[in-house]
Amino acid sequence: MTNNRGIISHGNNNNFSNIAIGDNAQVAATTPVDSVEPALEADARWDVGIVTILSEELRSIIDELRLHRHKKPSGLYFYQGEHTVPGATLRVVATQTQSQGQRSTMAALENLRRHYNPRLWALVGIGGGIHDDHARIGNVIVSTDVVYYESRKINPRGDTRRRGEHRQAPAQVVHAVNAYFTDHGTPAHINGQTAAHAGDQYEVYPGVIGSGEAVIADRGSDIRTYLTAYHEKVLAVDMEAGGLSQYWQENSVHGTANPGWIVIRGVSDNADEEKGHSYHELAARNAAHVLSRVLPYLCCTGAST
Image 1 (cartoon, rainbow, N blue to C red):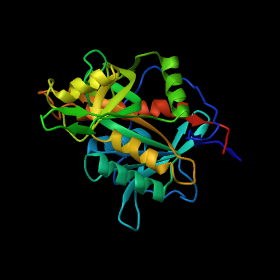
Image 2 (tube, rainbow, N blue to C red):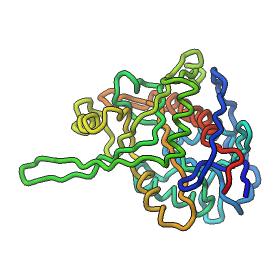
Image 3 (tube, rainbow, N blue to C red):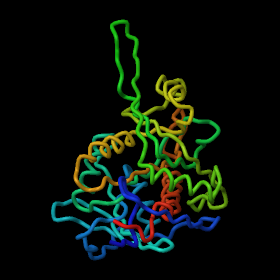
Image 4 (cartoon, helix red, strand yellow):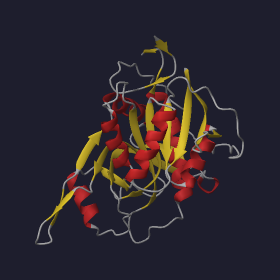
């Protein structure tokens, strides 16, 4: 049948809507967190399921997409609403993990799957930049490639040999992201999404995310050295994208079409000794805004399902 708001999902034949968006971003209007609206009908698959880790990340998504709090009888909190893009109205839901890391991310994805069954998973928030040219503070990395770096062998000599696991998002998502950068250039330039940086432009790059359990605050870390040698386009690191890509792979055993996935990280630090919290808000707001700009490319109007 025809679905006018479907999101690209793995295994479906979809058309892409390559609709350009305005060149200059505006600071999103604030929607009060305690503004609670009745739950939308949940009898069909939702379009976008967003996972965040920090409160600043969730707050940024709520404001950017104008979502409203909804509490399930089980006690789980979700933030949901409808987001209009050219040619479609998308049903969007967001949640926050209980803690940092791969395991909590996988649990949050399972909650989204059970309660909303979205067509697209998006992991959105902050990350540490490890590429001096591209991943400067405030810039945003849009990733359809994840390298999980924790797998390793430690031999009796104390020599550690890392064994990276590399996973890529479904081809439809990769094509959609490519279309965004074709239209807007690489890098794309957008105005900062906080009042203090509204007059400053930040850059948006496609790139690879390195993911593991370590908080990296050392420019000389062997993890940074390993990742840049493994793939020169690893631009940023986080602690959750590996869990997303792993869950996506293991979820493919279900009978329904596996959702697409994307990771969007605003650079809040350079994964070095100066790592701190000063730029969390800026990075989170920028990442949330980039998600809203990429969604029209991930949306397929008139696709058959």
